[in-house]
Image (cartoon, rainbow over all chains, first blue to last red; front, side):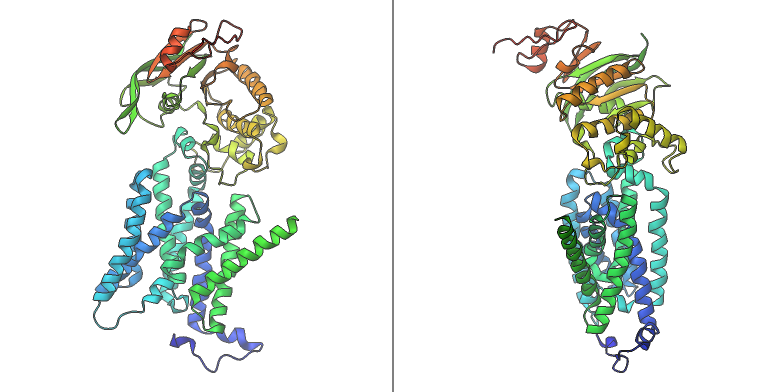
Length: 281
Length: 245
């Protein structure tokens, strides 16, 4: 990753932060990381409490198919990913619960297969597969930042508006039906919001690591609070801490950014769990 | 007594296996109806049909106009998502939710009602505790409080005495009797004995439904429903008859 090899800028000192923050790619990365964390904090607690981790994994891998086709067509890969993930979300949301598990598994693999074939068929320069699979937040452009900002509103506003409905359905679906709430619409809505979040997060940590960013901050927050709103808030905070520290770590040590972010998250989770165990003795 | 719910010739099943067939049942004002039958006999299914969670294959379920939307539902104990962190108070508040108000915040009125109900079931001091940290009896009370907060005309309970201890069971029965002075109570149970003193009507459900006035039930009918001799309710006092196999 050549863009990381800035030879002159790696000195320590008071002007260091100022220095790296003046790079546009760093500003973009930081902004994208913060917005992605906010999205994770809003949607992650629902994914974890509703046990939708597998669905989320399926959706994010389906995105690879869209990325591949978009690349082959020569359009922005993010658009292809968005189209594929939304389509998959629509299908999964309309499936009976009994068969959705099977179907998600199939979408997962077929999505990846489509992506591999189309990237293979793309003539000329083949893009770095690793970038799609493991993400590279340091490559986020100003356009990406603006798209992320739009996605941020698209995900968080509906959660503000439909909060009570989403909570009712997550807590007790049968009871929500008995209260005549539009349970099916709320479930499909939530899956679509998850899909939009995944599209955002793919830029940050890539297809394979999306799951981690949706779950690790929530797992850490869950160790500290049993209040759903507070878990959302803490997830945002921990998401930002993890994203930014992973970002700086990858910059310092020239490591892949997505993997650095996830590893920091994993270590923080172990630390928090360990500290909690110790303090309870 | 006035009819609140009229179920006429209702059939329903899952996929193509029929679960209940041609059931007719009227539920009266201030009735105390026991819905008994073996597991898989369709008891919970019938409750869900009444609540409109599922639609019948055929037949009709008529709910008196001013009762519609005022059905309180206490689902089976294990049915809610224990994985979801929520306090007793918030859980009770979800009982105020309706299609008309679910986009708005809870009102002051909702909050007050929830507090009053929690007081009534002696859980006011536990209102900020997480539901999953409460005992079985306390969780059952939270579920009942959630159903009561919408001020229902009919309260439908699914296996309310399962998974609670004897003391909680007794206080639950007293509480249901008290509620029965103001509202209709429908209890689905595979163990009707605790309700022997209070029930008014009893319906035995095993695909088909047999409806009885108090005291009318005899061993023959129960044998038909369960397919084997069973414990039997008597007149007024709970005496248990058990024929030899």
